[in-house]
Image 1 (cartoon, rainbow, N blue to C red):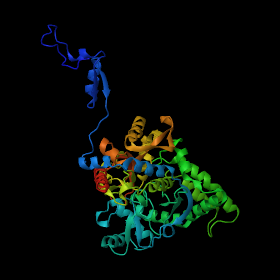
Image 2 (image 1 turned 60 degrees about the horizontal axis):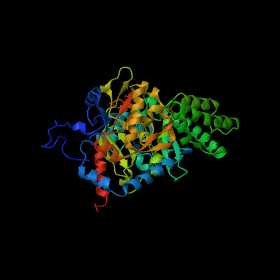
Image 3 (image 1 turned 30 degrees about the vertical axis):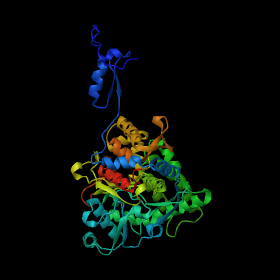
Image 4 (image 1 turned 135 degrees about the vertical axis):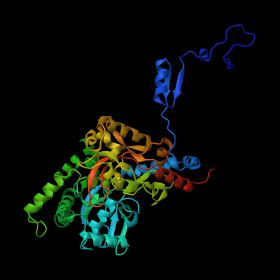
Length: 498
C-alpha cells in the first residue's frame, strides 16, 4: 500500500483524490475541547471520539510532575499505602476524657486543621477557644478569656491530628471534654474524637454563650460517663462495636458519612441502649445518676442526626493513618481546615502540611443568614472524604442535596468524578445506585494535579463572627496550591532521574 501524498502523481491525469478518499470508513475526529465542537461534527455525520483531557492545575511545576511520574517507587508505594488504608478496622473500645485519652492538661487545647495561632485564627476558631477557656474555668468571662488567648501565655495550642485525634469544625478539645476512643485491630492504631454537641449554637461552630458551656458540662457529668459504661459493657460482653460495619450499612440506608448520619446514629443507639438499661436494672449506674439521666442520654443522641459523625471521623483517621509514611506514595492521608487555611498531608512526605487559603462553601443558609455571614471552610471532618465518604459518597445519599444544595444528579456526578483522582474503590463502603460499586477512595496528589479535578467536600458552614454558631451547609473544594506544593515536595524526595 502506498503511503504517498493524497493526490495523484504528476503523470496521472485523473482528478486528485481528497484525503478522506484514502480510508474506507467515514472520517473520525478526536476532540478534547468544547462539547459544542463535537456536537457540530456529529450533526454532519462525523464519528467523534471524545477525550476527557484537562490541563494540569494552575501553578504545577512541569519538572516536578515529570520527576514524580518517573519515580519507580510510585506504583508500588501507592499500592502498599492504599492497601493498608483499605484493610484498617475501626472498633469502639472506650469513652474517655481527653486528659486520659490524649494526655491533655488544663491549659492545653487541640484545634482542627493545620497549625495556627490566635493572631491568624478565624472568628469561629476564636469563639471556640474562648468557650474552651471558660469551660475549663481558666477565666471567669469571655473578655478575660480573650485577653488571655491574645496574650499568648498560659496555654498550649496544637492540631488535633498531631495527637491522633480529629475535631469537627473548630475542633477545639480540652482536658475535661469526653470523647470516643477507636482502635484499629489490624494495625493497632487508635484515634479519638470528642462527643457531638448537636447543631446550632455549639462550641465547634464558635458559639460560647452560657447555654453552650452548660451543655458541655452536662456532657462531661452525664453523657460521657453513661456512654463509657455502655461501651465498656458491650465490649466486655460481646466485643466492641464495629464502626466500619455500621458505616458500610449506613451507605445502603441513605447516609454519606459527613453531613448525613441519621442511619448511623440510629444503629449506634440500638447497640448501646440495651447496655444502659441492663446497667440500670443491675444497679451499676455511676453514682448520682439514674434512669432519668439514661433517658436524657438516649433522647440527646437519638435526637441528633450528627451524633455518629464523631465516630465516622476517627474511623476514617484510623484508615488513613495506616497508610502514612510510605516513601514515594502520593496518597493523601489528611485534609483539614482551621477556618483560615486548608491543609493536606501526604503519605510520602511525613507530617508536613501543604496549605492554601480556605474557601467559603457554596450552599444553603439558615434563616436570616447569607454568604456574607459565612466563614471560610473549617474542621477536620474532611477526613471522611479522604477515606472515600462524605462528598465522595454523595451518590449513596441523594437526600443530602436538600441540606447542602444541588440536585440528586449533582450527587451522582460528584461521586463519579472522584473516581478520576483516587487510587482504589473501597471493598466495604459501596454505593447501591452505582451497582454497589465501591466508593472512590485514596486521593492521589498526582491524579489531582494532572486532571485538575479537586476533591469534593460537603460541609457545615460556621458564622464568620465569634459566638454566632452554624449558619448553613454546602459544598467546597480545596485550594489548588495544596496539591501543587505537595507535588513539589514529593519531587524533592524522589530519587534522581536514572
